Length: 376
Ligand code: NDP
Image (tube, rainbow, N blue to C red):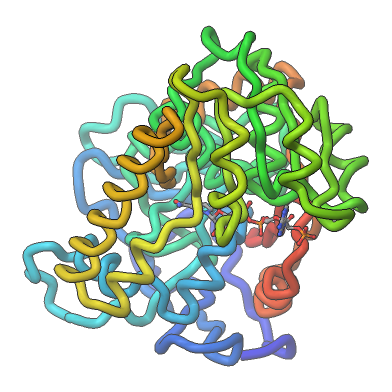
């Protein structure tokens, strides 16, 4: 692996009958950036169920999860999700392809696919239990896919699906917010300058909410430009003190985790249905370290304890938010994007030959939006 790979890219827009191999970045073991390996001999995924579509990848988005998965995070639970009945021939997940966002073109459809046809430009978030988008082709079910916004390039489009599916799942399912119920709501977003934050600010503003954001001082211009009403610089002093003088919040979306929940719960309106949702949960860490059964049980008990404490002592709901694949949710996002209400925030993009540099960029932290890879 590394930056000096010799590239002979396959430039076909769809695989011919004889062609069975494609270019991809794979890992054959978990580890640091050295495990990333470029190959032109990855197997082209096939449309193996009636509801699947084969997509020619034009751009792939990177997420913090790709870094974690490269190191083995979530391996036990994801392996179970890939093969719940242990019926696969191989019990190895390798070679594993990372990359969670895709923007590309449909090249083949299963017999029951009704919403897509070859030639359609699409975008999607690839579930972490499926082979990822750092490859020429990826397969997904049609329910995970959506038609790409016409106003965006593939690079721009690949910056949105995974954070959009995550934010929508967290804000709608866990937070109880939606387009028609947000106009009188005060929402606090911690970590507003990253991928999920920059998307969530725009979504909530499009829905009419009042949005307060915590971020570093040098991200204030970015988040205000995306619509944030109030900005708290967490590097300038205790954010809890700065936020405590403000009117209390209906929903907190926590993208930072750690000690945040200890000071943030008191910022919610008590006894009025207010909700704290964190995206930083211990589920996959616990199943990795304690095993599937113990990890799941311990995690469930910890969540239950916090939820009971929060409602009984403060009258607020404590919840975890998770990414959930959802093509129709991306349809709603597409409409907002094409209406100019949600902009892509691409901080950096890399050529396919420079995928390891893309991972290095993620590793440096301090994201200001998204990192994307041009695949085709
Ligand atoms: P990013 O890395 O894109 O963004 C994180 C942002 O938080 C950066 O801009 C960073 O900038 C900022 N930040 C760091 N520390 C603080 C702090 N103390 N206060 C305020 N801002 C801070 O991550 P994502 O937006 O993609 O994801 C956010 C979190 O959610 C990650 O932990 C991710 O793993 C998790 N996640 C969980 C999912 C789930 O299904 N549960 C799905 C998707 C994401 P700076 O350091 O310069 O301040």
